[in-house]
Length: 117
Image (cartoon, rainbow, N blue to C red; front, side, top):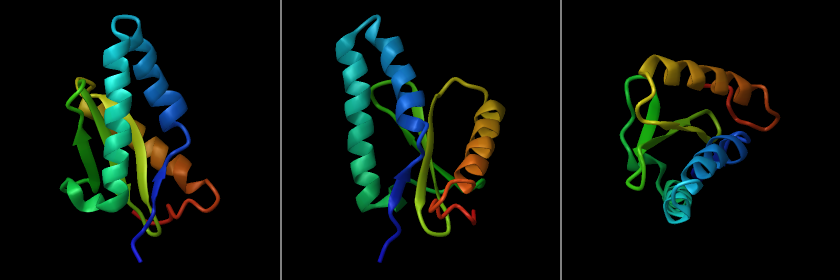
């Protein structure tokens, strides 16, 4: 049995909502394309989380076609965790700091399966 994909609780109301709200100011169509692409990639990852190669830090990254965003996910002991969607022009050190904090937060959640990784 393969591991389930879990979306961290802050991704949709935090990351995606902020991205949607920003783009909606200029183009509702673009904002909706980004959300639709997120939905498509999550569906793909549920079926095949190995779709994107693992980086040296253990994270896998999906680069959005509809905007300059990167979706970060990682294999943990019991689950695949989608930890965030960040603007691609953010400093890599900032993104890594956010991912570290989010991984620690995920480890504190009940039934997260985030005890390894």
